[in-house]
Length: 165
Image (cartoon, rainbow, N blue to C red; front, top):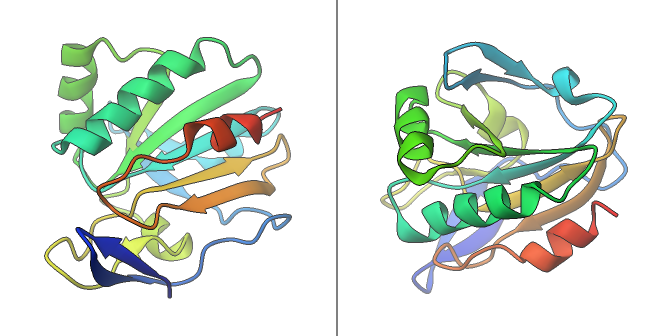
């Protein structure tokens, strides 16, 4: 369990973040077409997983846009944006925003947030995912983790991207 802040007020997440060097927990997420997206689909590539509460907030939308922009220069890397938003919302958002360089997925029918220690456990956003960035190497091992300490802040893009080098 970790403590983060939402507008300066402490809130808790459930579970534990994966440790650097560990094999990342398996996951099955729902793609925008409802197909399964699994951790092992990305073996052989680096994977930057960006999680956030909802596409319907300004900071979350900004991070999706930024990682989409950065993804164009990341050879051998996939950016995976994950939230509890339904796949249909991901699809509409991406179409409206021209988001086409990243993969978007919903955790609405999985234990992803619990397994990765990022489900918000209390406060008005309970059940949604906390803002985080988790980088996996080509073998699916964790090489970088950032749980953003204040929900209203964007992740550290430079550190996350540097972890892909």
